[in-house]
Length: 118
Image (cartoon, rainbow, N blue to C red):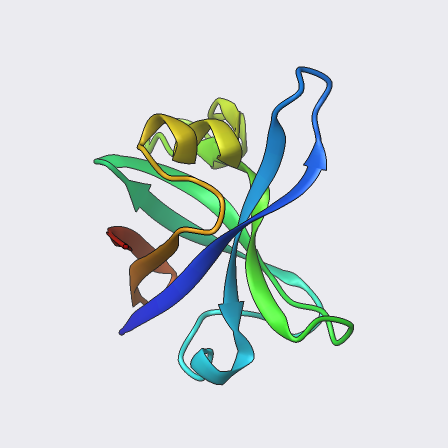
């Protein structure tokens, strides 16, 4: 299943950069692996590197979103021991910017960022 998300910006970090999240409309979430009012872990691949990231939902928001932090996935270690990364650094280094629309392919709890829409 391919879902279109939008890269949004949140708070400012101490280094002056802004946080990034990927948001999904509730209209597109029927088959997404989310837990109502909680977070579920998704393996998200961006440019051939796989990260563990939280897909979040709350009744207070009209969308789902990937949290602004992720961990590099390494099968040989406990996933939570992988290097913690800011999603803004991951997306920026891959050429993505705030307000970009992105297509993400989901298969269960595995996802891949497959394209940027102009």
